[in-house]
Length: 80
Image (cartoon, rainbow, N blue to C red; front, side):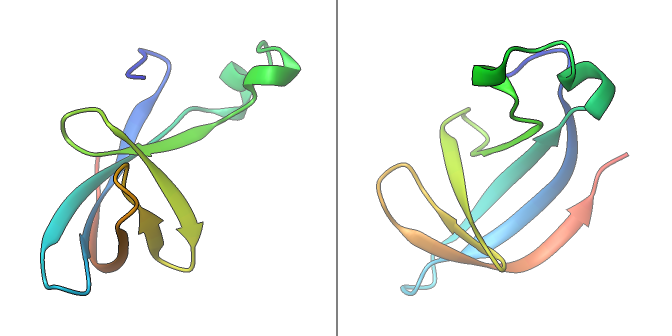
């Protein structure tokens, strides 16, 4: 899903119940760039693993990996 109109804004380190940690990249685009999209594609943000697999944000620092594993944020870093 990498697209030039999206910018990586945050790196998240999240941990599963078994202690395994994962890096999740959060990407966003400005509202102005999103305004020209159709109603079907109004997503202004997405999350993915470093290899590009999409990750679902579940709210309150929780994510679901592509294999269904639930992880919780343990650290974040804003990107410039």
